[in-house]
Amino acid sequence: MAIRDDWGHTLTGASGESLAHYHSALDELRVYRGDPVASTDRALAVDSGFVMAHALRAWLHLLGTEPAGLAVARDALVTARALPMTDRERGHVTAIGQLVAGEWHGAARTLEDLSIAWPLDALALQVGHQLDFFRGESRMLRDRIARALPAWNASLPGYSALLGMHAFGLEETGDYLRAEHLGRRAVELDRRDGWAWHAVAHVMEMQDRQHDGIAWLGEDTAGWSEGSFFAVHNWWHLALFHLEAGETSRVLELFDGPVYGARSPVVLDMVDASALLWRLHLRGIDVGDRWQAVADNWLPLATAGNYAFNDAHAMLAFVGAGQSPAALDLLAAQQQALRRGDDNSRFLADVGSPVTRAILAFGRGEYAAAVELLRPVRNSAHRFGGSHAQRDLIDLTLIEAATRAGQQRLAAALIAERAGARPGNPGVARLALRLPGESRAAA
Image (cartoon, rainbow, N blue to C red; front, side):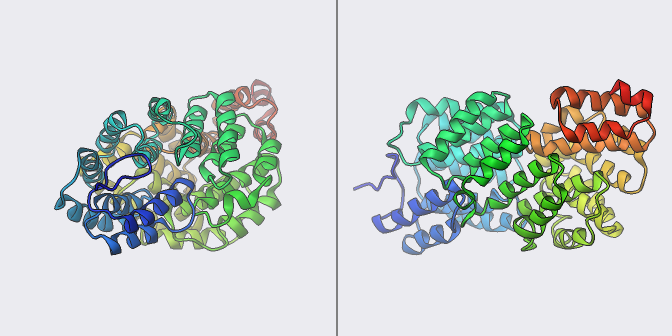
C-alpha cells in the first residue's frame, strides 16, 4: 500500500514511522520552529530511500543561503537522484539541482510548474515563496500562493501558513488592507507562525505605523519568538519601529539582547544585525564596539560569492568595524562571482556590486561616489532580493550620502519624496532639519 502525506501525495520509500518524522519536519519548517533538520534526519534514519526526506534535507540547507549548506544539499541531491521517484518528487529534485547550480530563476520556475500541477504540495509552495523573496519577485510572492489557494481549505494542515505567505505577498505588492487581514487571520489560526506575524509587521512598517507595530509584536512575544529560528528577524522589525519612533536606547537594548546578544553566526541573523547597526550609523549614533562582533562573524563567509544581498550586508559590517582588508577581499570575491555566469552574477551586475561598492565609498567618506553608484540602481534594487523594508537601507544611504556630499538639492528632493510616502514620520523631519534653510523648505 502506497504511503501518502497529509495532502494525498504518494511518498516513495517512506513508511508510517518515517512519515511521522517527515510531517513533524514540515510542520516545524512551516512555522519556523524547532529543528526540522533533526526531524528530517530521523525520517532518513528509518528509511534511507525516502525521496522527499532527502529533498527536504536539501531544501533546509539551501534556504538559509549559508555557503556551507551547499555541500549538504549536493549530497542529498546525489542520493535522491539515484532513487526511484514520482513525477512530483522529480520536480523537487530538478529544482534542487538548479538551485545548487546557481539557477535561482530556473528553480523558482520549476517549482512554479510543480505547484500548478500539484497545488496542495505545501513544501513546493513554501520553498517557492522563499525563492521569490530571495529574488525580490514581489508579484510572484503574491501570485504563487494565490494560484494554489482555491485548492485549499481550513481542514488541511498548513492552511494558516498559506494565508501568512499570501499576506506577505499582498504586502509586498501594496495591498496593505488585505495583507493585514489575512496575516492576522493566520496568527489567529496558529500563533506560532512567525512568518504571518512578520507579514503584519511589514504592513505597519510600510504604512509608517510605529506604535501599532510595537503593540502588534508586543501582543504575544512568546507566540512568535519562543523556539523560533525566525525570531531575530521579528525582533529586528520591532527595533525598526522603536528607531522610527526615536527611541534609540530601546533599539540598542534590543540589539544587545534578542537581535544580536547571542552573536549568532547564522547569515540571516547577521543580515539583520548589520542592517540595524547601519541605520543607527546613518543617524550618527555611536554604537560602540558592536560592529566588531558582527564583522568577525562575517569574515569566514563573506568571500563565498553565493548571494549578492548577503555581500552588501557583510560590507556594512566591514565598513562599520573598519576592517578594510576584509572589505577588499569581499570586492575581489564579487569580481570572481561576476564571471561565473550564474544567476547570482546577474544579481551582482544589476544591483549587488554597485550597492556594495557604494557602501565602501560611503565608509571612506567618498560620498559623491556613493551617490553616483546608488542612483542608477535604487529603482531596480529588487533584482538582488529582499523586501521593501530591507531595501529601504539603499534609499536611506543615498539620502545621507547626498547630504554629506553637499548635494543639497538632490537631498531635499529625496527627503521630499520620502515625506510623501511617510507623512508625519519623525525620522523624515530629522533629515530635513539637517539641510540649509532654502533646501529645507524644498524638502
